[in-house]
Length: 354
Image (cartoon, rainbow, N blue to C red; front, top):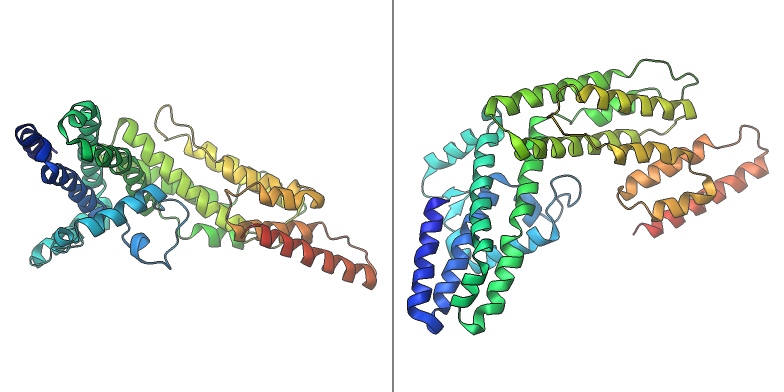
């Protein structure tokens, strides 16, 4: 960041000397930041989310609209420079490519330390640019004032979005969550007694978070960065737990109570090793569990007002609720009427989620 800032100081000096004819200097000033921004994303980010339309665009670690627009603009405006790089390293140096693999390997904790340093560096440059905003505005030609405003309000401010994306990404890599949905789905939820013991997946997941904290300690992550990593790791866990609960096809009221118990025990266990002052937020999962008690007459309204859940998760939950509420004694005519009503309700909910 010191080298970048020194280069920026030279650009600013040229702006002072050249004055109204410094449009190319202003352009170079902005492109220097753009290139550094892009390099960090390309090295540590999920590039597939930018170019692959089939890649999932939601969930934890997704690119915000501002970040995506910023990256698209940078890739188009300085493509002649970006073209010299492959995966963040010059394409004519295969040894560097191997170096990147070593940095991002699981043995190096997926570049946890390097990501933290890179984002701190970029964030420092961004804060310096924003704090010098009025001075920069006084130096640039009048015709470029709006362009500089756009650069500061979009690209520079998008550093926070990039930070969120990269922290989400590494947190998800450090906490192994792939197995969670399947383990939850395999549990028996159509039960008549809740019991006093949580399911096995809860203890296993708490063990994962204990290991996660040990990894953060080993690297020396502290302060706000530590809390951010925890925030994104919990967010990723919420996503996996929700996916597991949404796969449950048959569930009794007691089963939903068992889900609440599992979530409570997971949160309680996690609190033993979270950073001081950090409170795990699992409200999104708790809300999904409690939605099981929504009356059938209110399901359409609930589905339309809870867009924080994926459409598929909402439809699965509604199907599970309707199955659980199915009367035990119906004659054939009543059964057909209910099937028709259920089909119409699901179709109406599905259309409302498009």
